[in-house]
Image 1 (cartoon, rainbow, N blue to C red):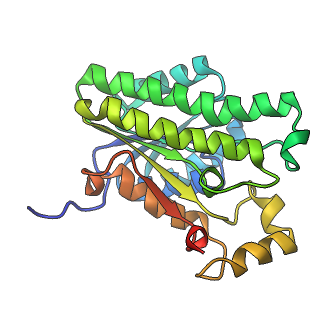
Image 2: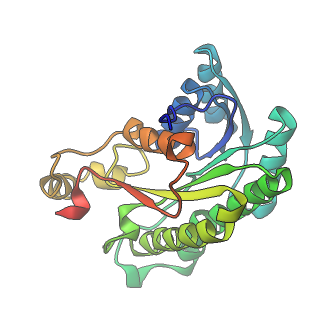
Length: 256
C-alpha cells in the first residue's frame, strides 16, 4: 500500500480563529496544500486581509465572521461554507480565549463563563455542526481540536483555561469513538508555548519565558507554522488511521 501524500486537494476546510496567530498559519498551510479554506473569527477586517492575501498567493479562500461561543453562529458558519463550496471535509477548532491570568481561586465568574463559552461550548457546537453535515453526506472527514499542554499538566495562573483544554481532550476521545463508524476522525493538537499575540502574557514575561525555555529540550518557543504542520497532517489522508489522539507539539517541554 502506497503512503498517502500530505495534501488537501479537493477538500474544504473551516478554520476558526483564523485572523492571526496559529489559525492564520493553519489557513495558509491548508490553502497551500490545495484546500478551499473558510476563515472564521469575530473581526471582519482582519479576516478579510488574511483571505485576500491567501487568494493573492494563488489559494482559494473566503471569510465569514462568527462568534463561535454562540451555537447559532456556528451553524450559520457551516451553512455559509456549504453554500460557497458545496461541502465541508475538515474542521480546525482553533478560536479560543483566556480573559484571566492569575490565581485560580480569584477567577471571576464572568471570566469563567467567557472562557468556557468560547473554548468548550464553541468547540462542541462546531464539531456537532460539521459532524452532522458529514453524516448527512455519508462522507469521511477530520475534526481537529486545538488543545494545549495546559490541559495535560498543571496550568498555574491559567487554571480555568487549562480546565477547558483538558475537557477538549476528553471530548476528542469520546467523539472519536462515537464518530469512528461514520469515517469521521477526531484528533487534537496540544501546543506548548508558541510565539503569538494570544500568548503574549507568557512570551513577553522574561521570567516565565526563560523558565519554559530552560525546561524545553529544544531550548526555544515554537512558531505558529510549526503547529500548522501538525494540523495539516491530521487533516490530510496521511493520518487516515489516526483518531482519538493528541499530538503534543511543545519542543519536548512535557517530557522534561
